[in-house]
Image (cartoon, rainbow, N blue to C red; front, side, top):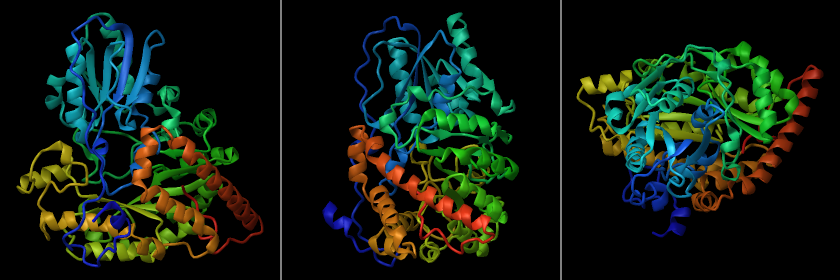
Length: 524
């Protein structure tokens, strides 16, 4: 079966059907760029720092576009704390522009490390150290596996890298670099410097306006990285007016809040919405479903420009949610709560985890049927993955159910443990089927908005975003992401502004429209 027949594949009803054609995944999306042989050691350029986001393998199931939707703020925030007498540069290997530069050779290289690309981070560290640079490794993996990382670095930044980075550079200047620096997340988040968005290649992202208004989450789910041993991240906020200034300063029509949970403090979210409303920008954010306890707050979000929310439903089984320590409404009430977002013109991207101990072979069909019945615009699926240092990892290790510790595969797209009520192969086949089924032509049609005027934006999102990985690879490679998507973003913004005027008029008249989402789709 060639790629054209895959495009028009009729997905069977059986989640475990075989054989099935592999999904398209080009080498440059699955393998890091080859590093050339390191030149001889030489003096580095003094006070030049290079910050690197290493390559990680992409899954063929999701859109390649999600990796260039908006940049992470981890490194740009570290760049913001760099002393003025230092020069700082930024390189993201996932933008398909090749390996990071070594001319001129930086005095220090800072590399953020996540579990799934730790191996690549170590390769980059060895490559730069062989040439004469000092290497500092930071990121979440330093919190869970510092002893593993230590041999690969001249220094580790454990915890809040924004706090320790100036101290690291000072010690480097003094010739007194220590092997380990640590900082907690206890200090007020408002004290953090602004991210250095000016370092980002704007044309390579759909939007460079990634924002973090809050830090932390009121949930401590057993499978989440926030439950890693030793990681304590109290809920902290920035002033709403500060977030508004950041939004205005970057000049983009669309922003993405990359907070773990923007709605943990409802009073703060209400203040934030009122600060953002005059900007006439659109934005999306991750929140929890219990936010719908307060429909008036959902209304405030819509009036402030929210067009989409990312929600971790995780499972449709209450026992699974209880076992994961997820504080959430009962699954039987999910559908009503989704309707509340839809009634306010806010699209829902639902995140679901498969592989819980309560999941059976029929879990996959039940999940897809529920998503289609509730006309969810988008969904993201993850195989349950035990990150090291979490309660889930300890549980599966104690039960002898871990299959291996190849961190590259701990990416929620591979099965790394033995499930209770199905085989590892069945779990992988079911996960693969979820994506094939949900983004098949038939399922896209079933989930379409009820009103005709919402169809163009909905189909554009489904087909241009979710079913166009060949196009995405071209746009990323040739740095055309921003140019191609900007008109679509503007179209969405203008449609949402019209919806906001309609909603505001209804509220002033003392009425509330029964259903708006089908008329005014709310997400790119």
